[in-house]
Amino acid sequence: KEPVAGSVVPEWHDGVTAQVLAPEYRRLLDVVEAGGEGLRAKELAARLGLELVPAKVEGVRVKAKRLVARGWLAEERPGVFISDARRSE
Image (cartoon, rainbow, N blue to C red; front, side, top):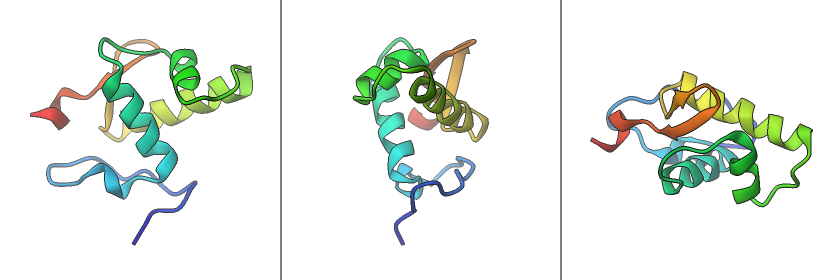
């Protein structure tokens, strides 16, 4: 079953794939993983093709923070999102 937009972000654990995430979260995860050394919310919004207005940037930040809280991403330092090393082992 395909997740729907706005759905709850499940906790990451061994064996679970990004396919359980709603499409907007999968895109965000893909952008961070392709980003290399870490990206800020504004950079993420730009790479996602969003308009760089405060509401859009803040929406990306909230989604990225949610992915950090659930173990999908890591926050290298405040506001800088990176791929969580546990997921790539």
